[in-house]
Length: 254
Image 1: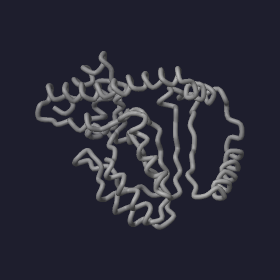
Image 2: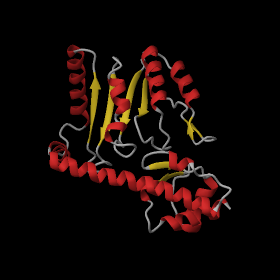
Image 3: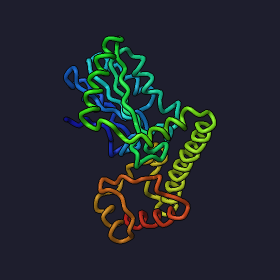
Image 4: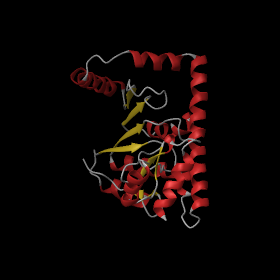
C-alpha cells in the first residue's frame, strides 16, 4: 500500500498537480482509493473539472478506482455529492464504490454500508458477485440485520426519506454555519491570521493549519481536543462552545 500526494499545506487545498503525477506513475491495475466528497481528513475536495481529469488519467492508465463515499449529503447535497460516482460509473471502466450510512443516518453503532461494483458485462458481474460472496462468508457471514432494516425502511418510504433528507440538509447547513462562524470569530480575535480556507472546505472535518505544538497546548491548557495533524471535527462545534474554541485557538497562535 502506498500513499499519493493530495493535500497542499501551503494553500490549504488540493495539490492537484502532484496527485496527477502520482496517478501517471502508478502501475496499470493499481487500485486508487478516492474520496468522492467531504474529504477526510482534510475537507478539501476536487472540483468538477479536476474530477474529469482524474477519470481521464485513471481510464488511460488502466487503474481501478475505489470510491469512498462515507459522507454523502454533508457537502453540497445528496445528488451533487454523488456526481463523481456517477461520472466514474459512466466512464466504461471497472469501479468499486464503498457507501456508508453511519454518518448520514446516525447509525454509527450499526456500521451500515454497502459495496457496489460496476462491471463491464453480465458475465463479469456474476464472477465478481461470486468472489464477494466468498469474502462475505469468510469475514462475517451473517451480520446483524437491525441497522440494515432501519436504513431500508427510511430509504424506501417516501415520507421517511423526505424527512431524512430535510434533517440531513439541516445538519449540512449547521456545519456550514459553524465553519463561517469560526472563521469570522478568529478573524475578529486574530486579524493577521487567515483561516478563510476552513469556510471553503467541506464536510465534517477540516485541516486547521495549527501545528503539533499548538494542538498540544490546546489540549493541555484548555481541554480543546484535536488530533496532532491539526484536523478538527467541525460538526463538534455548536453555539455554546464555538466562542470558547475560538478564544483558545487565538491564544495559542498569539
